[in-house]
Length: 205
Ligand SMILES: N[C@@H](CCC(=O)N[C@@H](CS)C(=O)NCC(=O)O)C(=O)O
Image (cartoon, rainbow, N blue to C red; front, side):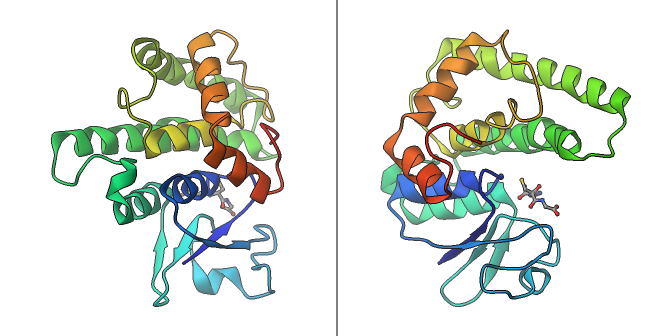
């Protein structure tokens, strides 16, 4: 299997998930600006949406969208307990969290990376993130991981998008529980290995 990624982008989450699960992944670093793979192929022919992450299965099938890829990888290794079993209420709660992270957090950061986003929109999005992080901070004040006592793919995803705060000047200093969470996730061997493989080193963007 191959993961198309860009260093530190949302593709870091499935990369972490694969390493947590002990899945051997080939990596292909995509130039997102030029839409080219590492070996110069047209990335748009692999994913017409033009973004990472993309998982290419051994038979050539393509799977896109981070939360779907995270769950696919985790389901390959149920013993890693990175997702609750399919069909259980806990699995739907996990999917609820993944949807919250993708739509309320991940996609609120996206305009902050664009040079042409108006200042008023930047301020609005930053205020919105404060509200949305407060909800997650309260969950993490009660339990070590988003789903409770077990580290799951949702934690890998939250860690990945929250790493962006510094780069786009989102002030998360009010969320000390979240800061502890980031530190704990960042210290996991699989996370350190993923960061290293993406050329990021410990905690760097
Ligand atoms: N809905 C997609 C969004 C993926 C996404 O936003 N990818 C970003 C990196 S974090 C990207 O590749 N952007 C480049 C582009 O859109 O041109 C998912 O959740 O997987």
